[in-house]
Image (cartoon, rainbow, N blue to C red; front, side, top):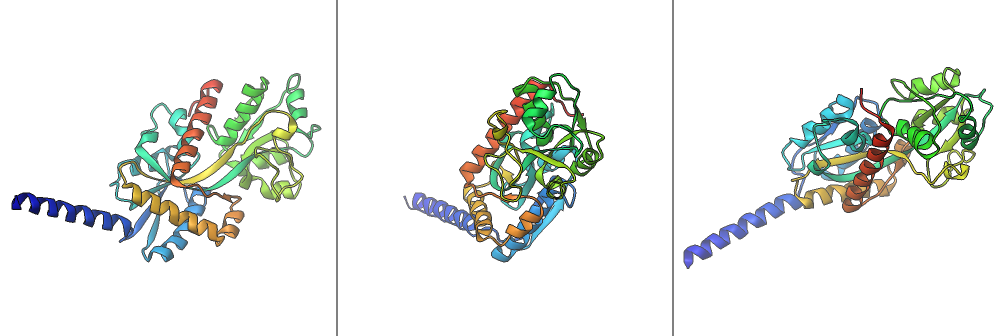
Length: 319
């Protein structure tokens, strides 16, 4: 009897210690593994949040770039990390897209909890200043008899998939895709008329649209954005109901205790809600998001399905 009581007490003590360790997380340095090279959207958002979180936690937040495989290398590394909350993946919408784009991405949705979705950047269609068509509807109608192409930052990016969805799937017009090595070259080529159109995430074309060196044709948001009030939405063109964004999100291995995941989510949302990063996000062309942990998981799952369906219908594959 005494022995059973002693074992029960020991078990309760162990559980209490484990729970206390989790609720007081973090107790040492936290590592953000950014799945892309420095200076990209994921890297910028990770570093902005790292500065605020280490002040909040009293622990260092180390940002490590693990680029490769379109984001797959970093995701694979974190999926195999200890699920203790100290190694966190930072990725873009590539995390959701790559699950279908690649035959073997090296990770599954079930390998992770979405710890936070920090920012989103809408996708925007821009056109050469000399293009005679001024609206998306005019372009879609003209594409039935004329030859158009559109550029993007590369195969499998959400702007590329937005183009496939609108042109090929929703409106049944053939507008071939021209992949570039990034948004900047795609927009530059559009400015110069080498390609008439480009779908890019907003940061890649914001200044050019404001400066009118390219036409802002349509933005894939539910409503016009105040920063570009003259650019209509895709929906306003009567082309279809569509909202397409590129996000930056944080992921923890699926076996990480949920109280750690939820604490991280709450802390990130508290920093975002404070507004201290609004200017930094805006400079990166990103808009803050605040989703609780369950909403974040649901959002990423919905994005994986949406883009997965587009990839399958359009026959897009990674090169």
